Length: 416
Ligand code: FA5
Ligand code: MG
Image 1 (cartoon, rainbow, N blue to C red):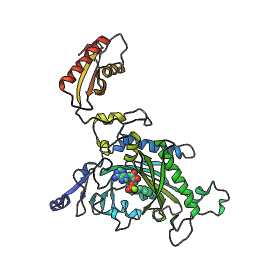
Image 2: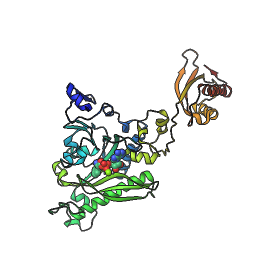
Image 3: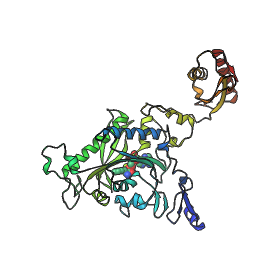
Image 4: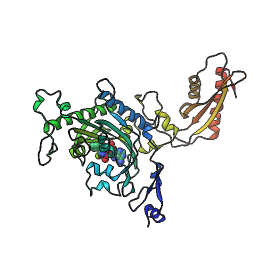
């Protein structure tokens, strides 16, 4: 039994990802199907629910942390290449060489040196090295996993990092002259890293937990039930996970902690202390919009996507289940009345009135003004779909004609 990788190796082929060709080797396990995902960027697609979640999170951090003149302090990095080095994804974050998260069974390797990032934390050290102190990283991540209602091999994360100097963290503390970020203990304790003072750690922990609870409350309301659980990550200490109670179940929404000082030392920020977190966008979106299945995020079905077309990303949307039965659509064109005012909304009302629940969507697809007589015509596409069964062509035609007649009567217009 040959894996895809070994077949490709034999033919001496390269793997093409995002317009670049990568040599393959015995580590290669990116499948043809997975290779189609980089570049899809659902989190940047207008009106996509993951894009709305991205905007809400960025907005929350912009408001929580304005700079001195009121502009956002956090920079947002949402278009970094998801193809990263093993150094970025693991080594720069102090993940031990034999850590199970590195294994071929968990990650999608392009080759022995390159992989599809398994978390957005992969860019943390590189952005700190660029001199940034407050930033968000948002993007697609890849993990070999089952496909079911809550797991998909491609999902999206947001990471946040904030670095602070000694003066900054103690500025609001009375008699803070003798307070320091650093001390020298041989080893870590459960509370803190050996190199940090308890005071500095606790101030950072407090700010981190406050801002993240605030984020969760901005989605799920002031009364949301949450709890902090101790966690372990190679790149933070101490570390925690935040869980929220939904439908009688505790759900993990993010991991976080105090950044390992060794990472800051290697990235030119040795004089600072930092916190970091990473959260899943699908988790937040599924809970926030009541989306029942993670696969729906990849749906091209207008019945799904159109539910998230809103003027303002703060709009409250509750997702309605899309029918599994096929849609059927028909167009209708008519000359608009010359004298009376006509708005598309008047037409929508007639359609809804006659079609009821089987109307999935009405879209203006053509707005035409005749060059000679200046008459205007509209063409609408009406999509019909029943939630419980397949509609027959005859049923659709009957309703469609009925809508045509109603439009003719009501507006005294000519159907084209
Ligand atoms: C991480 O990925 C760490 N990089 C997070 C982190 C960053 C910790 C910075 C500390 C500092 P974890 O594997 O637990 O941790 O994933 C983080 C979040 O991504 C989870 O809390 C969850 O919201 C989401 N997530 C993880 N796995 C999945 C999955 N299979 N499907 C959907 N969401 C997932
Ligand atoms: Mg976790």
